[in-house]
Amino acid sequence: MTMVVVFVFFFVGALIHYNIGKTGKIGFKAIPTGDEVLRIMVTVATTAVLSTVTAEVLIHTFDRGMSLQGVHHMKSS
Image (cartoon, rainbow, N blue to C red; front, side):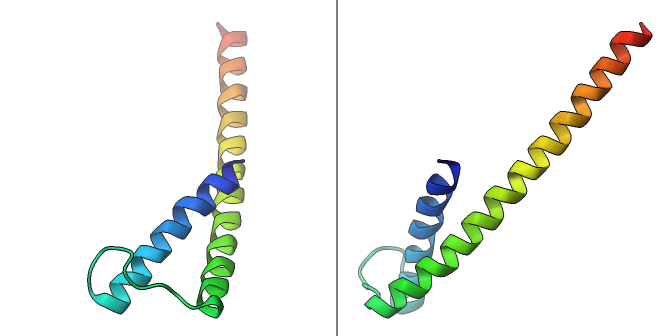
């Protein structure tokens, strides 16, 4: 589910950037062609997967480390 949320936000951001490149303004006046949408979606999906996986790895790594530190402190007290 997290990856879907990340994809949606990244895709909206990509469309805004597309419009800035095409019109010079923030908005949704320029509509990408089918081929452009496909390339945008592939790029956004790739970055969404990488972002979500990286965040999950970091969360699990640091949560595990904090849990172990908490256990260690409790035992030494």
